[in-house]
Amino acid sequence: MFHESESKQVHPDPTFTSIRKSKILVIDDSLLMRKLLIDQLPSDRFDVYEAEDGETGLAKAKEIDPDLIVLDHVMPGMDGHEVFQALREQLQFANTPIIVMSGRYDEVVQKFGSPLGQYDFLPKQASHDRLQDRLNAVLPMTVSESHVEAETTSVNVAVRDIAAVMAHLGQLENRLVEESNENQASAYFSTPQNNLRSQLPLILITAAISAVVAIFFYNFTGTPLEQRTAIAKNNKALTPQSTLKGIAALGRLEPQGEITKLSAPNSLEGSRIEQLFVKEGDVVKAGQIVATLDSQTSRLAAWRQAQSKILTAKAELVKVKAGAKSGDIDAQKANVIRLNAELNGGVATQEAEIARIQADLRNAQAENDRYQKLYAEGGISKSESDSKRLRLETVQNQLSAAQASLGRLVETVKAQQKEAESTLNSVSEVRPVDIQVAESEVQAAILSAEKAKADLDLTYIRSPIDGIILDTHVRAGEVVGTQGIASIGRTDRMYVTAEVYETDIGKVRIGQPVSVSSDALPYKLKGQVSEVGLQVKKQGIFDVNPLTNTDYKVVEVKVRLEPLSSRKVAGFSNLQVQTVIQTNS
Image (cartoon, rainbow, N blue to C red; front, side, top):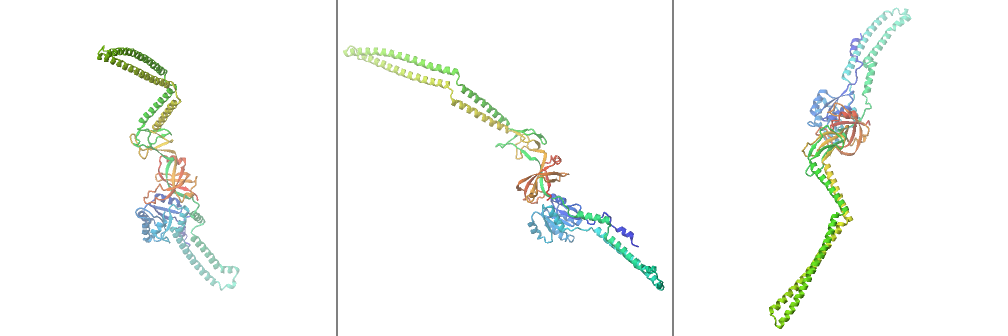
């Protein structure tokens, strides 16, 4: 009578959800942006699909018929504007809400025109609140089609039930009316029981209508109390809740203190490796020799030579302080005595020679006088007179020569005596200035040796820190290039250097939790902000998309990974990662 079996078939299950998930299609060539959007969209409200380019996005849109499309402006191949036009040309997507994402609003307006209902704009790196606001504005909650169909079927069944009840009530009323007419003749015999019987049709009709209304209300609401409670809980879950808000940024993994590039000192002829003592993965200590240069041999010899010069200079200083040797002094004294004796002996000999010549001169003078007298008297010839005069002159000349030789001898020997005495004085005296000169020469030799040692030390390449050899860039015999000799890092504590956009840096605080992920890692890393940079720089880490804007201004933020996360990625230095700093504001 009441189609009970049919009604039971259309009653929804108590676990049925009255609000279906909205389907969102994200078309963006950046894997990072797709992941960030997916992470910010609650899975209990949205089914999110993704496409990496325009062609794939169009095909995916036809397949799933999304309730909302999030479209990147700059993409390789079909750009965002071309995809937008292709969607709007299809009747299926003529009214589908589309959110265009870009870092430059003016470029979007220039290409797409003013939004004004055609599309909605959302800047890249928008906050979680702004994203939710845009979604709530363009995407109202959608009722499930299956639930609508169930509700419609339930109402139709209720209407059929009401019609059947009304038909039965009509038949009942007719019978009651007939019975009432038959009993009118005996109306005067009426009793209270008969009056109650006459009112029975009205009572039955009222009761039937109440039952029908109850059935209709039950079928129209579609669920008993338990299901209404479940729906209320589901609607509450769909209400925007207080969620963690974050700032997304690209970053790279680095050891503590960043990666140390170990290199060789600059040299005009270049630095060539003679020996390399480490390999990738070796653990090194601060000060440990990693390699030696080929100039080590020559600089070692130069240092040894400088050391010997120090010894020579010091010995000379001792010699100067001690003065000349006693043998040298005695020899010089003997030289002075010899010169004195030579002078005395030479003078005596020359004086004896002069005395002899003077005696000979007197004899020659006497003979010359006698012969000249005889010549004057005519007793001898002129030749005999001239011979005696000539001999006199000869002896006179000999005397003059002997006297001159004596003078020269005296002068020469006296000069030699003076020189010998000066030499004796010089070797016997230790002057303070000589000591100062000798000490200066010692100091100069020491400085030369220190420089030679410093040059030698430059040929030994030592590790400046405790760490692990991450990579070697040269082999023995090769010239050190711009990459250096080796890369060293302290991988026992790993950090992430994240590049945060300058517009978001004001929300970053030391100690905020950070989530780190990468396509190369099957797990997420955890850490905390440990340092916020003080300088705005040009972006140095870029997305894989070659058309991505590379002119952003960023501030570097250091993230210290938790010990467990740090150990997991100890071998992934320089790996590009995606970070989300949870600001909660």
